[in-house]
Length: 426
Image 1: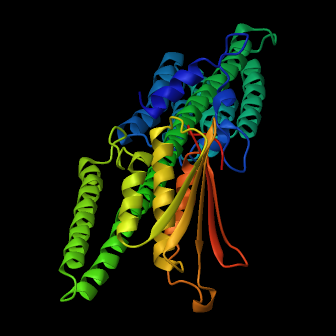
Image 2: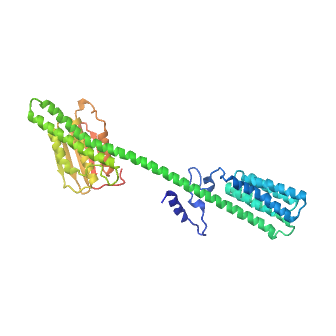
Image 3: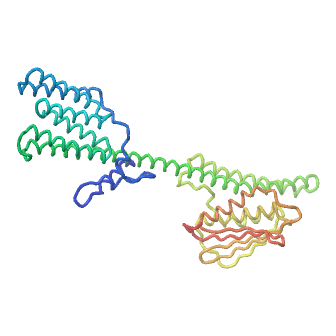
């Protein structure tokens, strides 16, 4: 169902106690204005075909001509009344553009008709058309004033023509018709206001969807960039270390050279596999049913520590408590945080070791990584994207992460990852 269709279904339920639909009750407010139907109607006049204008302009003089022949008036009176009818008919032809002026001309024509002979029923109908146009095209205040003036003048003119009591049917019917024309015009204006409001609601809904789509695209780009960083950074660091060892072992230790090149090959193979996973998601459109990251998490921790040890970097692992089942997203976030922390420790830390503590609780896992830094060498040349990625991963599953450098030169990473995602936390 389209947005307009849903809005129509919603507005159909808004009915007042007396069974009359109030258009204003379901018109959404425009910025800076109340829910007034007059605000929702285009200020420009509606467009009518030329043939319709010609017919409207011709009906009044033709009808007056027939009435004049029926009354058997003399030539001069008949010509005057037909001339007045032509002027009124011409004014009705431009009713959509100048409704108030048209009503004024029609009132003047009716007054002239009464002064020349008596009230013309065709003029009464012309007045109702003019009142309807003003009510449909002008604001409520203008329409009320126009209807009241028309009703009073029509009452006086028909009473003068009837030459009878004020309760004569010919006198009362003019006032009744004026009220009906006014109500019909306001109903048409209310319908136009409803259509305009629904169109505006649909437009704003489309704009909102476009903004949400752009936000999702930006979020997905950040997520993919973070995943690529996590996938590549660690293994490239491993490749860099073993490539350096291989260069030093060349011509000196064939065993070390072979071992280093084997580690380089394994790390490159792992990078290619994980990059292939990411690229597969991108080619498939990145639907919700496709997992962007590898499904495994802390079960790869031993392989990670072994890889770090092969580069000569020692990780002293300490576990507290009993491991508990974790949600796949939280499990992966914990692994990526550990991987990034140890990679940073090996690249930017001082010495060849770091301390890793995993403290399991009933509802969460606490991760602590400690490594020494060389304060004399100044700040590292890292981009900081790894730390940002760790913060984002912890935040995504409802956890927390903090990093700091102590006065004794120890860099600390403390993370809390819940066993299951916690929504609504920042």
